[in-house]
Image 1 (cartoon, rainbow, N blue to C red):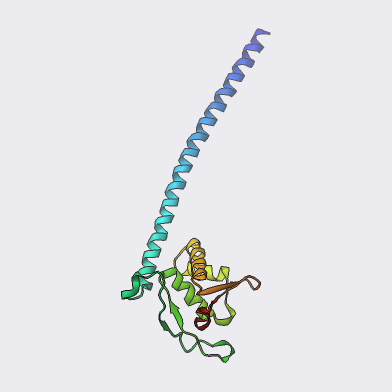
Image 2: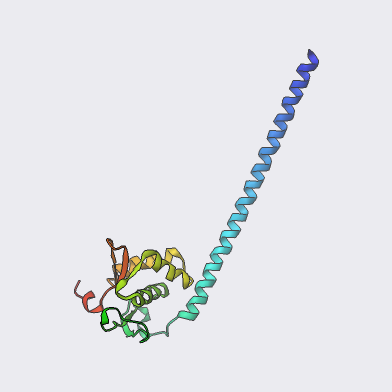
Length: 169
């Protein structure tokens, strides 16, 4: 009987040692996984910064003396004549705004015209230009607060405000 008790105790010690080593291994793996995740996130952030800098260099407007102002209504750029105008109305000029992401949004909404764009379509346009979803959301709100765009909650679409009506509100 003593032999069986000794073997059971030895078995229990072996199981405990195996459990201890398994826990140690899991802790090491978690530590390394966390380090890998941190390095991967750092690389992704650097990719975003690089893409933003590249996009900014390709999309940056010529510097103007009024570049210090938060939002400027510079001379508007007409859209290309080969794009159809809905309803036969005259094409409105596209306002120039400060900020690359804001300008991407304004350009996309101007191109969409009266049909507007859904929030995800605006986000896609911003992402296609090399910027983040967060930048899109912040700039949609910023442009809305500046009274340059509006969001129709019923239609769930964003629209460029008519510059002639924007000053009335």
